[in-house]
Image (cartoon, rainbow, N blue to C red; front, side):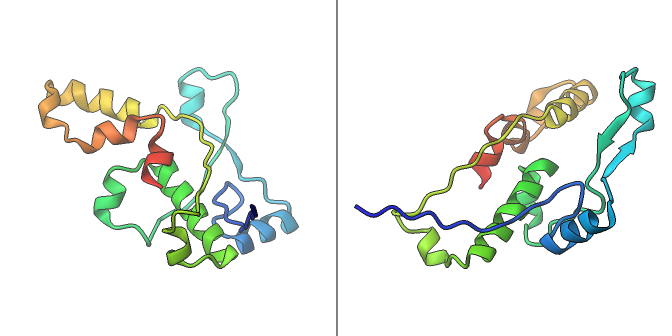
Length: 144
């Protein structure tokens, strides 16, 4: 039995959304951390946070984006970059001998947005099924 691991690099981070942007940020010493006024108003002990500026996924359709919170779109873009960097063809990816492992943390952003919308519309039937997918902790694994 042979086991092969093919690795590609893909990243979307506070330093940039491509390998080149990240390398440039590291070279010039850009941190990607900023002072968030809203955190101050909310009483956080630290108002410093990371921000991914100007991120937009042009490879996803509007329908695909509907079920994906922003952090999932960013993960998708990093995955797409890694696959491209590894030069893995779509036929190999769709084969039964190919698999991917994703690790992810949860985010409260989608659940918070859903609870705000629930307060406005007053009934869950008006929310739309895409909200169910966006609040699941497994949303990255499920979408990718």
